[in-house]
Length: 310
Ligand code: CP
Ligand code: NVA
Image (cartoon, rainbow, N blue to C red; front, top):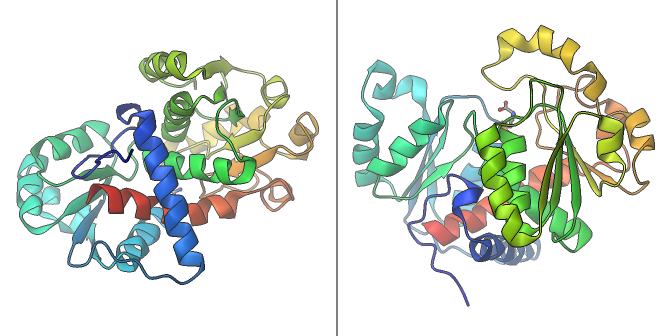
Protein backbone atom coordinates (compact mmCIF):
# COMPACT_ATOMS: atom_id res chain seq x y z
CA UNK A 1 0.00 0.00 0.00
CA UNK A 2 1.26 3.49 -0.80
CA UNK A 3 2.69 5.49 2.13
CA UNK A 4 1.60 9.14 2.28
CA UNK A 5 4.81 11.21 2.20
CA UNK A 6 3.23 14.63 1.51
CA UNK A 7 4.94 17.32 3.59
CA UNK A 8 7.78 15.03 4.67
CA UNK A 9 11.31 16.40 5.08
CA UNK A 10 14.07 14.42 3.38
CA UNK A 11 17.04 15.14 5.62
CA UNK A 12 18.52 11.74 6.42
CA UNK A 13 17.80 8.24 5.09
CA UNK A 14 17.93 7.13 8.72
CA UNK A 15 14.60 8.99 9.24
CA UNK A 16 12.85 7.13 6.40
CA UNK A 17 11.11 3.79 6.77
CA UNK A 18 12.06 0.97 4.44
CA UNK A 19 8.58 1.34 2.86
CA UNK A 20 9.29 5.01 2.17
CA UNK A 21 12.65 4.19 0.59
CA UNK A 22 10.96 1.52 -1.56
CA UNK A 23 8.25 3.97 -2.55
CA UNK A 24 10.84 6.54 -3.68
CA UNK A 25 12.62 3.87 -5.74
CA UNK A 26 9.39 2.53 -7.28
CA UNK A 27 8.18 6.05 -8.12
CA UNK A 28 11.57 6.85 -9.68
CA UNK A 29 11.26 3.73 -11.83
CA UNK A 30 7.79 4.82 -12.99
CA UNK A 31 9.00 8.37 -13.74
CA UNK A 32 12.12 7.20 -15.58
CA UNK A 33 10.00 4.88 -17.72
CA UNK A 34 7.61 7.73 -18.55
CA UNK A 35 10.55 10.03 -19.33
CA UNK A 36 12.10 7.52 -21.75
CA UNK A 37 8.86 7.16 -23.75
CA UNK A 38 8.20 10.92 -23.73
CA UNK A 39 5.10 10.63 -21.54
CA UNK A 40 4.60 14.06 -19.94
CA UNK A 41 3.55 13.89 -16.27
CA UNK A 42 3.09 17.15 -14.37
CA UNK A 43 1.74 16.67 -10.84
CA UNK A 44 3.56 19.81 -9.57
CA UNK A 45 1.89 22.39 -11.83
CA UNK A 46 1.83 25.75 -10.05
CA UNK A 47 4.29 24.61 -7.36
CA UNK A 48 7.66 26.22 -6.62
CA UNK A 49 10.84 24.82 -5.06
CA UNK A 50 13.44 27.20 -3.59
CA UNK A 51 17.02 25.88 -3.75
CA UNK A 52 19.47 27.45 -1.27
CA UNK A 53 23.14 26.86 -2.08
CA UNK A 54 25.99 27.68 0.32
CA UNK A 55 28.32 25.40 -1.68
CA UNK A 56 29.01 24.77 -5.38
CA UNK A 57 27.03 22.19 -7.38
CA UNK A 58 26.67 20.86 -10.90
CA UNK A 59 24.50 17.74 -10.58
CA UNK A 60 22.29 18.68 -7.64
CA UNK A 61 21.42 22.14 -8.92
CA UNK A 62 20.74 21.12 -12.49
CA UNK A 63 18.93 17.86 -11.76
CA UNK A 64 16.61 19.50 -9.21
CA UNK A 65 15.92 22.43 -11.53
CA UNK A 66 15.17 20.15 -14.48
CA UNK A 67 13.13 17.85 -12.22
CA UNK A 68 10.83 20.70 -11.18
CA UNK A 69 10.44 21.86 -14.77
CA UNK A 70 9.59 18.38 -16.03
CA UNK A 71 7.03 17.89 -13.24
CA UNK A 72 5.29 21.11 -14.30
CA UNK A 73 6.62 23.29 -11.46
CA UNK A 74 9.26 25.96 -11.08
CA UNK A 75 12.63 26.02 -9.29
CA UNK A 76 14.35 29.11 -7.92
CA UNK A 77 18.12 29.10 -7.48
CA UNK A 78 18.94 30.99 -4.27
CA UNK A 79 22.62 31.64 -3.76
CA UNK A 80 23.13 32.02 -0.01
CA UNK A 81 25.59 34.83 -0.77
CA UNK A 82 22.71 36.90 -2.19
CA UNK A 83 20.16 36.19 0.54
CA UNK A 84 19.80 38.25 3.74
CA UNK A 85 21.13 35.10 5.48
CA UNK A 86 24.52 36.42 4.51
CA UNK A 87 23.80 39.65 6.44
CA UNK A 88 22.67 37.93 9.60
CA UNK A 89 18.98 37.09 9.08
CA UNK A 90 18.40 33.90 11.03
CA UNK A 91 17.76 30.55 9.41
CA UNK A 92 14.51 30.38 11.43
CA UNK A 93 13.20 33.66 9.99
CA UNK A 94 14.38 32.63 6.53
CA UNK A 95 12.38 29.40 6.93
CA UNK A 96 9.26 31.25 8.10
CA UNK A 97 9.40 33.70 5.19
CA UNK A 98 10.26 31.21 2.46
CA UNK A 99 7.39 28.98 3.64
CA UNK A 100 4.98 31.79 2.72
CA UNK A 101 6.14 31.77 -0.91
CA UNK A 102 7.33 28.26 -1.69
CA UNK A 103 5.96 24.71 -1.68
CA UNK A 104 9.33 23.14 -0.86
CA UNK A 105 12.91 24.09 0.02
CA UNK A 106 16.07 22.27 -0.99
CA UNK A 107 19.26 23.33 0.78
CA UNK A 108 22.95 22.54 0.33
CA UNK A 109 25.09 23.84 3.15
CA UNK A 110 27.96 23.13 5.56
CA UNK A 111 26.32 22.64 8.94
CA UNK A 112 23.81 19.80 9.23
CA UNK A 113 22.22 21.62 12.18
CA UNK A 114 21.31 24.47 9.81
CA UNK A 115 19.15 22.08 7.78
CA UNK A 116 17.50 20.77 10.95
CA UNK A 117 16.79 24.37 12.06
CA UNK A 118 15.41 25.26 8.64
CA UNK A 119 13.09 22.26 8.75
CA UNK A 120 11.98 23.02 12.30
CA UNK A 121 10.78 26.51 11.35
CA UNK A 122 9.53 25.73 7.87
CA UNK A 123 5.95 24.71 7.12
CA UNK A 124 6.89 23.26 3.73
CA UNK A 125 9.04 20.14 3.16
CA UNK A 126 12.81 20.59 3.38
CA UNK A 127 15.16 18.46 1.27
CA UNK A 128 18.83 18.05 2.19
CA UNK A 129 20.93 18.61 -0.94
CA UNK A 130 24.17 17.82 1.01
CA UNK A 131 25.66 18.87 4.31
CA UNK A 132 29.06 18.15 5.83
CA UNK A 133 27.37 15.16 7.48
CA UNK A 134 25.03 13.59 4.89
CA UNK A 135 24.07 13.43 1.21
CA UNK A 136 20.74 11.53 1.18
CA UNK A 137 19.52 12.41 -2.34
CA UNK A 138 22.79 11.09 -3.75
CA UNK A 139 22.46 7.78 -1.98
CA UNK A 140 18.74 7.31 -2.68
CA UNK A 141 19.72 7.70 -6.35
CA UNK A 142 22.60 5.28 -5.86
CA UNK A 143 20.26 2.65 -4.38
CA UNK A 144 18.08 3.08 -7.47
CA UNK A 145 21.12 2.66 -9.74
CA UNK A 146 22.29 -0.46 -7.91
CA UNK A 147 18.81 -1.99 -8.09
CA UNK A 148 18.65 -1.14 -11.79
CA UNK A 149 22.03 -2.77 -12.48
CA UNK A 150 21.89 -5.80 -10.17
CA UNK A 151 18.13 -6.35 -9.88
CA UNK A 152 18.32 -6.37 -6.07
CA UNK A 153 19.55 -4.49 -3.01
CA UNK A 154 19.19 -7.09 -0.25
CA UNK A 155 22.51 -8.86 0.29
CA UNK A 156 24.52 -6.68 -2.13
CA UNK A 157 28.15 -6.15 -1.02
CA UNK A 158 29.27 -2.54 -1.31
CA UNK A 159 32.84 -1.48 -0.54
CA UNK A 160 33.45 2.24 -0.15
CA UNK A 161 37.12 3.19 -0.39
CA UNK A 162 38.14 6.59 0.96
CA UNK A 163 37.14 9.32 3.38
CA UNK A 164 34.45 8.56 5.98
CA UNK A 165 32.53 11.62 4.76
CA UNK A 166 28.95 12.73 4.02
CA UNK A 167 28.58 10.27 1.12
CA UNK A 168 30.02 7.39 3.19
CA UNK A 169 27.60 8.23 6.02
CA UNK A 170 24.59 8.22 3.72
CA UNK A 171 25.74 4.97 2.09
CA UNK A 172 25.82 3.41 5.56
CA UNK A 173 22.31 4.68 6.33
CA UNK A 174 20.98 3.71 2.89
CA UNK A 175 22.62 0.28 2.85
CA UNK A 176 21.45 -0.42 6.40
CA UNK A 177 17.83 0.36 5.48
CA UNK A 178 17.73 -2.00 2.50
CA UNK A 179 19.80 -4.96 3.73
CA UNK A 180 23.12 -4.33 2.00
CA UNK A 181 26.55 -5.28 3.38
CA UNK A 182 28.44 -1.98 3.51
CA UNK A 183 32.19 -1.94 4.13
CA UNK A 184 33.82 1.44 4.66
CA UNK A 185 37.56 1.31 4.07
CA UNK A 186 39.39 4.44 5.25
CA UNK A 187 42.84 5.36 6.47
CA UNK A 188 43.13 5.49 10.27
CA UNK A 189 41.77 8.82 11.51
CA UNK A 190 39.35 9.21 8.59
CA UNK A 191 36.75 6.64 9.60
CA UNK A 192 33.03 7.54 9.59
CA UNK A 193 31.49 9.33 12.57
CA UNK A 194 30.96 6.81 15.44
CA UNK A 195 27.41 8.09 16.11
CA UNK A 196 26.39 7.59 12.48
CA UNK A 197 28.01 4.13 12.54
CA UNK A 198 26.05 3.17 15.65
CA UNK A 199 22.73 4.39 14.20
CA UNK A 200 23.40 2.59 10.90
CA UNK A 201 24.15 -0.61 12.81
CA UNK A 202 20.80 -0.30 14.63
CA UNK A 203 19.02 -0.13 11.26
CA UNK A 204 21.22 -2.91 9.88
CA UNK A 205 20.16 -5.27 12.68
CA UNK A 206 16.54 -4.90 11.49
CA UNK A 207 17.17 -5.40 7.75
CA UNK A 208 19.85 -8.11 7.71
CA UNK A 209 22.48 -5.59 6.57
CA UNK A 210 25.99 -5.35 8.02
CA UNK A 211 28.22 -2.31 8.46
CA UNK A 212 31.97 -2.94 8.60
CA UNK A 213 34.83 -0.50 9.04
CA UNK A 214 38.21 -1.68 7.71
CA UNK A 215 41.53 -0.17 6.63
CA UNK A 216 42.85 -2.47 3.88
CA UNK A 217 41.49 -1.66 0.37
CA UNK A 218 42.48 -5.02 -1.21
CA UNK A 219 40.60 -6.98 1.48
CA UNK A 220 37.64 -4.57 1.28
CA UNK A 221 37.01 -5.04 -2.45
CA UNK A 222 37.54 -8.83 -2.55
CA UNK A 223 33.88 -9.86 -2.47
CA UNK A 224 32.36 -6.49 -3.46
CA UNK A 225 29.57 -6.23 -6.03
CA UNK A 226 29.98 -2.44 -5.92
CA UNK A 227 33.19 -0.47 -5.36
CA UNK A 228 32.40 3.15 -4.48
CA UNK A 229 34.69 6.12 -3.99
CA UNK A 230 34.51 9.89 -3.47
CA UNK A 231 36.94 12.81 -3.27
CA UNK A 232 39.56 12.76 -0.53
CA UNK A 233 38.94 16.41 0.39
CA UNK A 234 35.29 17.47 0.41
CA UNK A 235 33.94 20.98 -0.07
CA UNK A 236 35.14 23.05 2.87
CA UNK A 237 38.32 20.95 3.32
CA UNK A 238 40.31 22.61 0.55
CA UNK A 239 43.12 23.59 2.93
CA UNK A 240 43.68 19.94 3.89
CA UNK A 241 43.88 18.81 0.28
CA UNK A 242 47.67 18.42 -0.05
CA UNK A 243 48.03 16.56 3.21
CA UNK A 244 45.07 14.29 2.40
CA UNK A 245 46.53 13.39 -1.01
CA UNK A 246 49.49 11.90 0.86
CA UNK A 247 47.43 10.17 3.56
CA UNK A 248 44.99 8.61 1.08
CA UNK A 249 47.55 7.54 -1.57
CA UNK A 250 47.00 3.81 -0.86
CA UNK A 251 43.22 4.29 -1.20
CA UNK A 252 43.05 5.03 -4.92
CA UNK A 253 40.52 3.04 -6.98
CA UNK A 254 42.76 2.00 -9.88
CA UNK A 255 43.26 -1.03 -12.17
CA UNK A 256 45.54 -2.70 -9.64
CA UNK A 257 42.82 -2.56 -6.98
CA UNK A 258 40.22 -3.82 -9.47
CA UNK A 259 42.40 -6.90 -10.06
CA UNK A 260 41.73 -7.81 -6.40
CA UNK A 261 37.96 -7.64 -6.98
CA UNK A 262 35.41 -9.74 -8.86
CA UNK A 263 35.68 -9.24 -12.61
CA UNK A 264 32.16 -7.85 -12.84
CA UNK A 265 32.28 -5.57 -9.80
CA UNK A 266 30.71 -2.20 -10.66
CA UNK A 267 32.48 1.07 -9.89
CA UNK A 268 30.54 4.05 -8.56
CA UNK A 269 31.47 7.66 -7.75
CA UNK A 270 29.02 10.41 -6.81
CA UNK A 271 31.09 12.92 -8.84
CA UNK A 272 32.72 15.38 -9.17
CA UNK A 273 35.82 13.16 -9.45
CA UNK A 274 39.36 14.30 -8.87
CA UNK A 275 40.76 12.05 -11.56
CA UNK A 276 44.25 10.82 -10.74
CA UNK A 277 43.52 11.07 -7.00
CA UNK A 278 40.74 8.82 -5.63
CA UNK A 279 40.03 7.29 -9.06
CA UNK A 280 42.09 6.86 -12.23
CA UNK A 281 40.86 7.73 -15.74
CA UNK A 282 41.25 4.09 -16.67
CA UNK A 283 38.73 3.03 -14.02
CA UNK A 284 36.34 6.00 -14.27
CA UNK A 285 36.07 5.46 -18.03
CA UNK A 286 36.47 1.67 -17.89
CA UNK A 287 33.95 -1.09 -18.53
CA UNK A 288 33.07 -1.54 -14.83
CA UNK A 289 32.20 2.14 -14.34
CA UNK A 290 28.58 3.26 -13.98
CA UNK A 291 29.33 6.79 -12.77
CA UNK A 292 27.35 8.60 -15.47
CA UNK A 293 24.29 6.35 -15.07
CA UNK A 294 24.51 7.29 -11.42
CA UNK A 295 24.57 10.98 -12.30
CA UNK A 296 21.57 10.60 -14.63
CA UNK A 297 19.53 8.84 -11.98
CA UNK A 298 19.76 11.87 -9.68
CA UNK A 299 17.14 13.40 -11.97
CA UNK A 300 14.70 10.49 -11.88
CA UNK A 301 15.01 9.87 -8.14
CA UNK A 302 14.70 13.54 -7.19
CA UNK A 303 11.63 13.80 -9.40
CA UNK A 304 10.20 10.97 -7.33
CA UNK A 305 11.10 12.71 -4.06
CA UNK A 306 9.56 16.01 -5.22
CA UNK A 307 6.38 14.37 -6.53
CA UNK A 308 5.96 12.46 -3.26
CA UNK A 309 6.64 15.21 -0.73
CA UNK A 310 5.39 18.40 -2.44
N1 CP B 1 27.15 14.44 -6.63
C1 CP B 1 26.79 15.71 -6.43
O1 CP B 1 26.05 16.07 -5.51
O2 CP B 1 27.28 16.59 -7.37
P1 CP B 1 27.23 18.18 -7.32
O3 CP B 1 28.16 18.62 -6.22
O4 CP B 1 27.73 18.61 -8.67
O5 CP B 1 25.84 18.62 -7.05
N1 NVA C 1 32.03 14.49 -0.37
C1 NVA C 1 31.86 15.44 -1.43
C2 NVA C 1 30.62 15.11 -2.21
C3 NVA C 1 30.32 16.05 -3.35
C4 NVA C 1 29.06 15.70 -4.08
C5 NVA C 1 31.80 16.85 -0.87
O1 NVA C 1 31.12 17.05 0.15
O2 NVA C 1 32.42 17.74 -1.44
